[in-house]
Length: 487
Figure 1 (cartoon, rainbow, N blue to C red):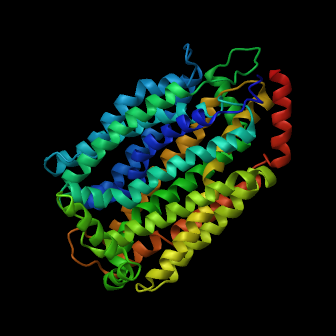
Figure 2 (cartoon, rainbow, N blue to C red):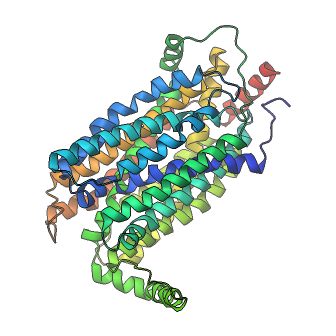
């Protein structure tokens, strides 16, 4: 069967999506808790944490271009990209565990340990996730099948995101019996084991089918030249940077928002009104009734409220994902991505205008934001696959991995800038992790970091799409021309 017409099986789609589940158990932890882990768990000063996340993450990000060139030139009996999942599975798990371990060093030793393990994690993430992402562009040449594949993989992403954002900190506190350092290490060990298994399953259940028709051997110099003239690639690189700056910034600051801005009594009352406290009490009664020890759910209201807030957003992101494919098939990826990214940005800005007692309004806005942003999630990656097709269509050369390096490079730069920006804002506004209460300036900085700042960055991303040429009509043209060329 022509790869442009190949219909992927459910088994292959699920198998491929497990790779994203594995990667996102680590990635979502970086997005949501890295700044908090460094400042409040490992007790590194906020300014130093900002430097580590930004500087070492930024340097490591450019390894993606090297990795893209290497992956495109890999030749094995398993293909170009699949073997990298097998080769990097175990190192990824090991380094992930080390990055969230807390050896008892002095302040200088802690800083050095955090910098080295974070830098290594960024490198191994590139060696694993860039070939994984490029693999989606060669499983099938059908753009509709890629839309469907993206929906599957991002359901897996949402599952990982739910586990991290809703359950990681409560699990760490419970398993560590109140000691978050011990709890983080135990939870990350479990995630590392699960991740290694999932990467191996992805390797075993997928197959590379798309092979470009070319009359010349690609050189790295030619690949870079092609990229520099590929306007859709440049736009997607910038868009990815802005999206992940926003995700890292707001995601990493929510825990501070609930701890220091929202009123603790209002959060406790909200949890009681929706029946959450009754649910936890019933759960513990059932567990102890079976002769087991009590489940040590954290007592602080902000921890439970923050977990539920994240869970609500993730659940409705999953609903949004299911609307993504039919909307994109009808109106084109670019148009739907831009519209729903703008709507999600407006929801973020609304957080600025809520008083500390408006817990219900905060949750409703998070639900709307989750749904709107969920529609965009599969489209970003599917658009990168379209850019790879655009490059082959225009240049008669295919360099899938180096095209996908835009996504991973942008992801790493965005993660580094967003995570570092969050820690920088904390430092600039006078945040003190050891203070029982923060100053009004620090609280204002936290509030701005989950509302106006990320909302404006999303809006800038929307404006970039006005220069992105691959609309619905061009998608159809490219797919038809490549189908005829490959046949």
